[in-house]
Image: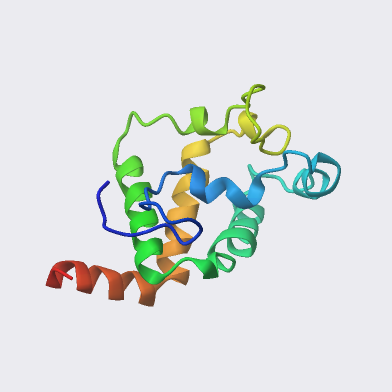
Length: 141
């Protein structure tokens, strides 16, 4: 995705992926703290899932500008539009990686529902920012 944005963290092009949504849930080297706490949440319960998404994603991504949020949500929308997109693969544990999600997240009943909830809640919670970025995009800025 060529969006002309620079990363808010380092001076490189901002290329959002669905993994960006999972950053707050990375428990690598924090399994006994963050991992234990996140392990108490039932990711198959839509109410608990929504509360966690709001707590750790939509209310915490303040370092992202409205344009960064729009680019990130656009990537998610594209994935959700693809009926064959494998959301489960994003949650699978890779023992070679220095990135890890909480235990059992790779066994989530419906990973697509998790990402659909992220999309729905981002649309609600970031409504004004997303509308502003979309208007600028349409205007060719």
